[in-house]
Image (tube, rainbow, N blue to C red; front, side):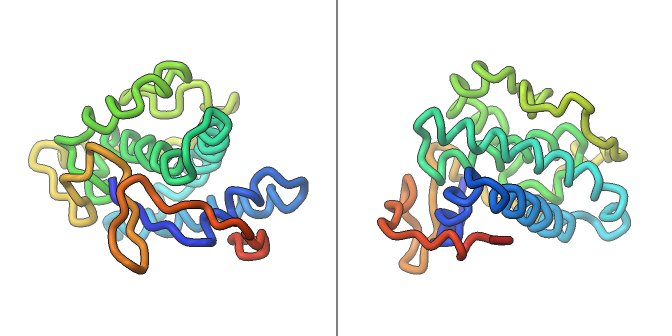
Length: 189
């Protein structure tokens, strides 16, 4: 998968583990992801998906931190959460929101299969053990879109590694973390 990565991502990584600030950054990141992915949805489905996306992205923040704690790079841990979201979109037929084509779903699962298996994550159950005890909001599916999927926001051909788009081009594996990261640069800090 191809992701963007800049100093704000590293600042968010550090800020998420801080008391008080971490909660604000978490909330801001959830809002940001909900907004970005809602905008990719068909206009007549955006509002009905908002509560689901809020709950889902909030749960993936725990996945992100678990990935970091297990030694994944910032880009890899973030990619894991994006893959989870794409599994959820695939399951619901929300193909217009997907970041990679439906025929690459299994390839993305396989790259992180060990992590996913440790945490009970499957394509059918994208949150696994990170599912909140109270669950997540429901939203209507559009399974008919899986018959002939059109994914205007998907980029295929990046299933073999994490690719990071930087100001200087695409880097395989991600950038090196800067030594001095200002946590104030994190969204919501």
